[in-house]
Image (cartoon, rainbow, N blue to C red):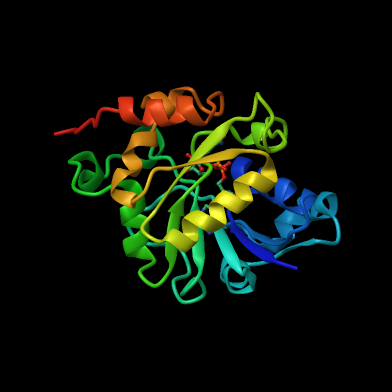
Length: 217
Ligand SMILES: NC(=O)c1ccc[n+]([C@@H]2O[C@H](COP(=O)([O-])OP(=O)(O)OC[C@H]3O[C@@H](n4cnc5c(N)ncnc54)[C@H](OP(=O)(O)O)[C@@H]3O)[C@@H](O)[C@H]2O)c1
């Protein structure tokens, strides 16, 4: 049984936990306030789920999902995530996150920054252009004519493979938008992000090509 450590139990973390349990994963999920605040969610998820502190969730996972807004100074457990694939759902929102100059200038993408924060992990940008509730409602079987596609970006092919398998289990095709330096193409405001999960594989690939990098002074 594969265990996913999920850090962040808000809109994205909780929906990913529901989706993961529904296809047979075990999940260990954490928020910032402690496991006692996740009793309701864990009761809903059933015996395949438990709540923990972030370090314990990271340590328990065969791989991990970080569904927490990015901070300039790392606030994720580096040691416990070492050598693991780490899926990062982060979208950079200035209204919420404040201006991050190294991203605004185009020097680094959000997920290159996360990779720097977790230097011994294999970071993949995933699940960033789908509204959380649609994770459970928009999936379709492989080959269905209305199957939608999601993008993944990583510097590690094994992380891309893992995300591709997970997307498939959740009912989505994959478009590989690697490496992390290209991950701005799915950022907020770009065509692929605006269309969210309303694109099939060909449409998503086209929207990635249509992206134009925005550099803020
Ligand atoms: N909402 C969407 O539909 C959507 C879709 C795609 C991508 N995203 C992106 O995914 C990320 C998460 O979004 P969200 O909507 O799920 O946010 P959210 O509802 O605000 O949830 C954030 C979660 O992170 C937890 N958290 C914050 N700092 C933490 C820390 N240091 N350690 C452990 N847990 C921590 C919070 O815990 P507490 O509740 O205890 O504070 C909360 O459970 C954001 O970057 C967002 O832009 C969101």
